[in-house]
Length: 152
Image (tube, rainbow, N blue to C red; front, side, top):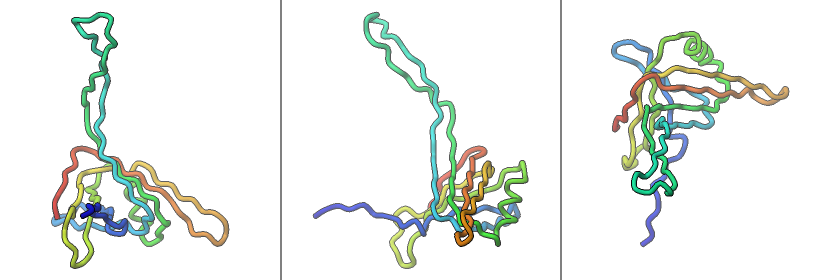
């Protein structure tokens, strides 16, 4: 019997931002045509010479110096959430974000949950092409501290 991957359609991935209240209410950022999530280790390189063989080629040794989480969105410019995006760009305070994986209704939960943590919207671009095309844009969100995975 062949083994196939359990896939997830992009529509079941959402990016949400919290309002900072208690209890916190999360709002989905609507109009995203693609959503990207990067969990990255930051490193520096050292090169070590083998002590017992001065002719040997040195080897790189990594030192992990930090971690970061980044979200990138390609969006249709959503006029109903324009004020929310402007507010996120205007503040120097971080907001609570979620990058969420949900499941179809009635589906079997395989990898449902979300990455969550404090972050800043660091870049927002809007592009309008021609008279008939709708305005599009990009949104970059950078972590500000530790993020955690929460199972649904």
